[in-house]
Length: 153
Image (cartoon, helix red, strand yellow):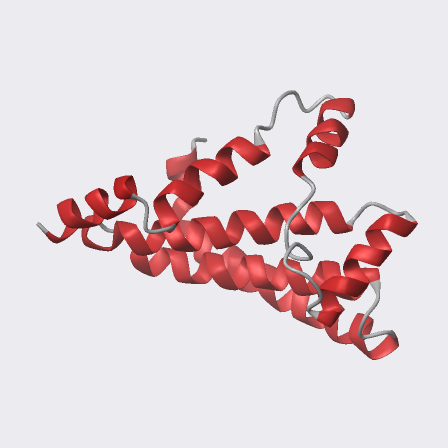
């Protein structure tokens, strides 16, 4: 079985995953709407929501939109990984995130995530490198703008 065999099932799998995230998130947010668990589930739902949108923009004429959604997905995924650490500094960051405090509450701790994944035998995940590469395509940099011009052309 290859990835090409799995792609036709992806929308249904994503729908089922989204429904389960919603079910569990409703329970978690009822217990404590600003808990670490609630934050993680909300980010999981954001990730799923963005993936639903990516499906609609996977064509040559909408590739710019796909880059923006991919960046949003990576941010949510990486922040979810950051929020899973069970310590006081993580809970403080989650509290700031819920409060909308500061410019960096939404930014993942890539180095800590990288170290964790490496310690689990995951090798080099290059989270910050991948995030940075999509930043260049999702912001109005020269490279991104030039890509947009080629898409319109």
